[in-house]
Image (spheres, helix red, strand yellow):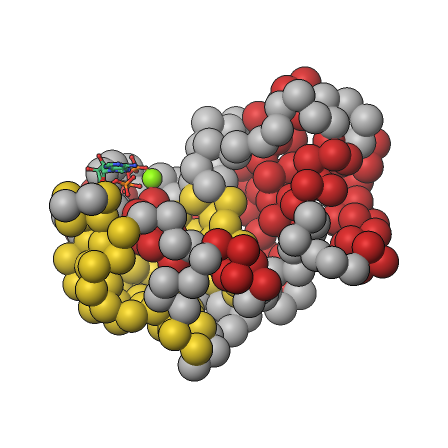
Length: 234
Ligand SMILES: Nc1ncnc2c1ncn2[C@@H]1O[C@H](COP(=O)(O)OP(=O)(O)OP(=O)(O)O)[C@@H](O)[C@H]1O
Ligand SMILES: [Mg+2]
C-alpha cells in the first residue's frame, strides 16, 4: 500500500505540488491524469526521490519512505519507468534488461527474472541481441517496462507509457500493463491518453496546478466535465 499525504514537492525553491494526497492499494491500478505541466511526473518523481520534497509524507507498507535513496526504494519493491523510455541505446536489448537487475545481488534471481520478462515479451527475447536504438517506439517502451520488471517490483510507477505510439501499439502496452497488474503488481500510471488509462484503473486522480482536483472511480468515464476536457469530448 502506497500512501501519499499532503505532499509538497518541486525543484529547488519552485514548488510544483501543493499538498497532494494519493493512495494506491496493493494490486490496484491508479491513474493520474491532468493537463501538461500540472505536476503529474513530479508526483512519480517525488515517490522515487527524484525531486525535492518539502512537506508531507510518503508511506509504503507502513514505512516512511519519503527521503529514501533510489536504490533503497528499488529494494523496497518500487520501480519507476520515466517519461520518454530512457534506455541505454548503445547496449543490446538483453544488456538493457541485465542493467535493470544490477541491484539484485542474487544472479539466479536475475536469470529467473530475465526468463520471465522474455516470457511476457517474446519480442524482446527474439531481439535480445539487437541494439536498443534499433527498436520501434513501442518495442522500446516494452523494453523500458521489461527492465523495471527485472527488479521484482511490487509497485510500478509508469510515466506516459503510450506517449507517441500508434493506436495499435498503445493498446498492446495497456494490455501488458493489465497483465502485469493481474500478477499482483500495483501500478500508478500517468497518462495523456486519459481515456485508456482510466479504463484500466480502479481509481483516477485528476491533478490540476499541483493539486488534486478530483478523485473518482470508473464512473469518471461518463463525467461530462472530465469527458470534455480529458477524453476529447468522446
Ligand atoms: N527538472 C526540473 N527542474 C525544474 N522545473 C521542473 C523540472 N521538471 C519539471 N519542472 C517544472 O515542474 C512543473 C510540472 O512539471 P511535470 O513534468 O511534473 O508536469 P506534467 O504534468 O508531468 O506535464 P506533462 O504532461 O507535460 O508531462 C512544470 O512547470 C515544469 O516546468
Ligand atoms: Mg509528465
